[in-house]
Amino acid sequence: MKLIVAVVQDKDSANLQQALVAAKLHATKLASTGGFLRSGNTTLLIGTEDRRVDELLDLIKQHCHTRNQVISPISSLDANTDGYMMHPVEVEVGGATVFVLDVDQFKHF
Image (cartoon, rainbow, N blue to C red; front, side, top):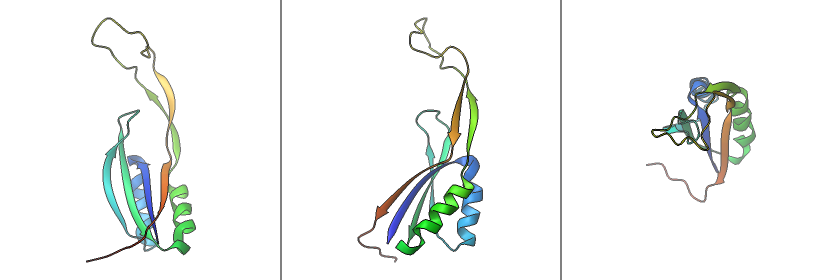
């Protein structure tokens, strides 16, 4: 058995969750926040049999896409702006970060 931890952008989470339900894969949804852009993410905890891991990874890949986003510069409260971005910057966001973990034991009560 495997535990899949998938961190996906909020914009992709609804479509992915619908695909998981259609595939009869159960997930626990956790709200999370990204550290770099401080934007909303969804972390999904998905337990599945070893034989379904590739199918699950394909679903995640199909429903979680990267996109470009312009971020505003970080503002400083004081006059010292050394090291801060002063102009909007385009960055790539989205996609999914996925961890596949071995599960030694699973109990459902």
